[in-house]
Length: 148
Image (tube, rainbow, N blue to C red; front, top):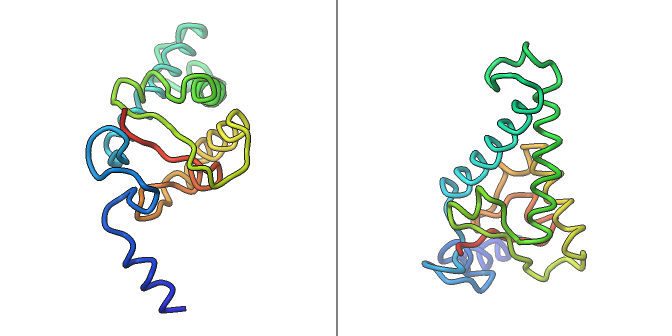
């Protein structure tokens, strides 16, 4: 087993090389900071939309007890829909990131985006990632984030 781990580590040179992606520039795997910035922009957009509909300020959860659940639901629907149709969301687009299939899972694209988004909303699968910076949500869906 140690030989297998050594061979796998020997193949790793930079994030994405084992997936045939370039080290830098368009098509390369973005860093965690860029991906997190896109996620935060998308979350902020969803919170602002929910706040506009509920009349809340967006900062006080006591004002609208269901606002955070509604924001999470909106975030999930928005993310799955945008990724299914465009391969990116507004926040991801602003920071220059898109989601692409790796071909390792035989899931249809919309199903993969729903699986990926559901696991992303659970948070833990997204913060556990491999040397290629693919979270468990990406691995389960057979996807990878890449720079535009």
